[in-house]
Image 1 (spheres, helix red, strand yellow):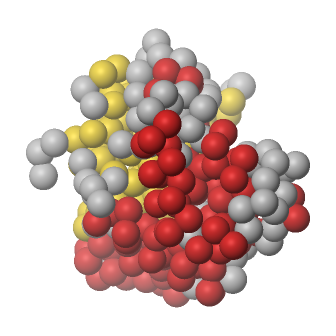
Image 2: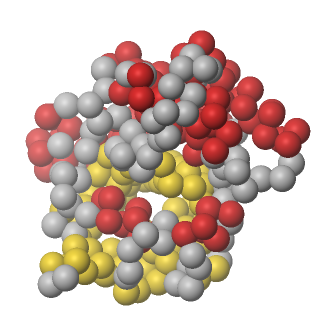
Length: 238
């Protein structure tokens, strides 16, 4: 691999006096799923928030060769780097269809938007069945599908997913798993932050383990599977 789409180098984030990220470096190649695993509070979300332009940081973040230091969060979205947060950030009183259209609000090509709408409905048939249903009345799993679908409506080149399986039933996790594999086959680059290490190891080609704001281990999925500490501390709990 030699074509990184996202490069994070020596990233530090502070919340007041708390040093949340301590020199984190990650490189994500085009067309791969890169996993970041670790316990709650380890710094996974903080890293994604920094990339998305939501928090101040020290260090360097480059996307498609461009330094993101001076870019606004809206500019980063328009560059094709889309963040699907753990909170989902749906419009609760909007319908499924309206939420999806909000994901395309910065796009001008209406034919492409219509094509992507049908792609999302094909990817998640449950959303197709609930086009007119208000988001707040949906189950947690359906809301997660909608959040991913809305992110896809922004026409991402790279998608950052933060804890997409948290609190979901196994049948919903399987639906999301199949959707992620389809997106990978279509060439989308994905940065996946997950406490569910089994899920991350199933999909990611390469991973990093973050604990207390520092990367403790990085390597391929097979290397993680073979690592005794990862098996005992993370894989064994799922």
